[in-house]
Amino acid sequence: SLEEQAKLLYKKKKSKEILHNLSGGASSDDVTMSQVLEKLNGAKTGASFLPILNIADFEKDDESNGHVAFVTAASNLRAMSYGIPPADAMETRRVAGRIVPAMITTTGLVSALSCLELVKMVRGGLPLAMHRNSFVNLALPFFAFTAPVPAEEVGGVDGKTHTIWDRITVKGGGNKTPTRTMTLGKFLKKIHKKAGCGEEIEISSISYGPFMIYANFLHGDDEGVLATPLLDTVRDAVISEDDDDDMFFEEDDAEEEGEKENTSSAVILSEEQKAILSKLERKRFIDFSVAVENIETGEEFELPPVRLVKDKERTHDENIEDMPQ
Image 1 (cartoon, rainbow, N blue to C red):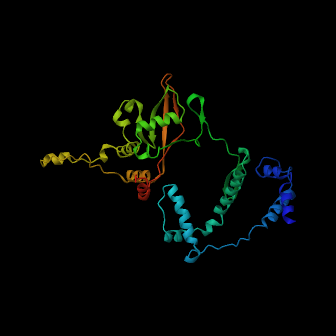
Image 2 (image 1 turned 90 degrees about the vertical axis):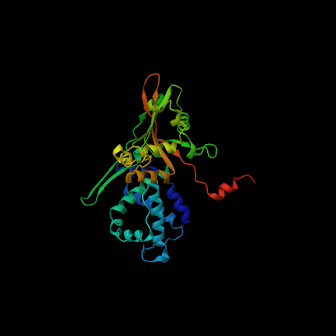
Image 3 (image 1 turned 30 degrees about the vertical axis):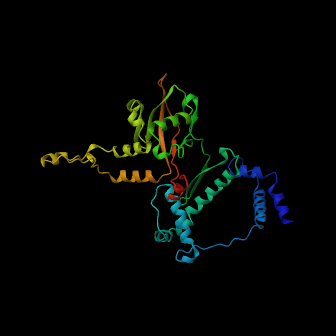
C-alpha cells in the first residue's frame, strides 16, 4: 500500500546522512540531490494520509471568522510574558493591516529558518554542531550560516560550573510559608540549601536588577532586616534607590508656619519606580543575583540566577472551602 511504501522510504539508511548534510556537517558529495528529493517525496506521500487542510486568508475586517480575536489573544499572552502592555482588538486590527508586506519577506524567511531549528530540537539527541545561526540581509542579498558556540561556563562553589541557562528555583511553602510572608532570613536559608553550600559558604549579597536588597556586612546581624518579608524588602529597595533630591519633605515650611507635622512619608515616586513596582506585582516569579563567599579563603562566587516563584493567588471561593466546618 502507499502507506507501507511511505514507511519504507522514511526508514531508508540514508536519512541520517541527509540530515547531517543539511545541517552543514558533511560535504555536498556525500548526499546527492536525488536522495534529498526522494526523501521529500516520501514525506509528501506520508502526508497524503492526513486530513486535508484548507488555506485561510487573513481577513481583519470580518468579525465572524475570529482571526483578529485569535491574534489579539495570542499577542496579549506573549505581551504579558514580557511585561508589555496588552492591546485591544482595534489596535491589533490597525497594526495587522500594516505588516502584510513584511510577513512575505524577511519575517517569512526568519520563521522558516526558526522552524528548521525547531524540527532539530524536537527530534532530540543532535549535537550542537548540527544547529545553525543564520545571518540574513535580503537587500544585499547576504546569507551566512554558522554553528553556535556552547554557552560560557562560569565557575561556582566547590568547582561547580553553570551557564546563563541555569537557575536555582525557590518556591514558597504554600500555607506553611507563603511567598508574601517569606522573610529575608528564610529566603537566605532556602538559597543556601538549594545551592548545596557548605557551612564555610556565606551569602554575601543579593540584588534585584540594579537594586541591592541584602549585603552581609550591612545586614548580617540585623534581626529586624532578616525578619522583614522579602517582597517588602524588594519594594523598599526600589523606592529608596533614588537620590535624596527625589524625596520631598516639607519640614522647613512646617516650622515656618508653626506646624509640627511628620511628612517623612511624603515620598514622590518617579514614573520609572512606578513601572518597576507595577511589573513586580504582576510577575509570577522574581529573579535575583546572588553572590556567595568562602569565609575561610575569602573567595567570592556568583551563583546561577535565583528564581523566586510566587504562590498562585487564591480566590475567595478557595479560601472559603479551606475554612473548618
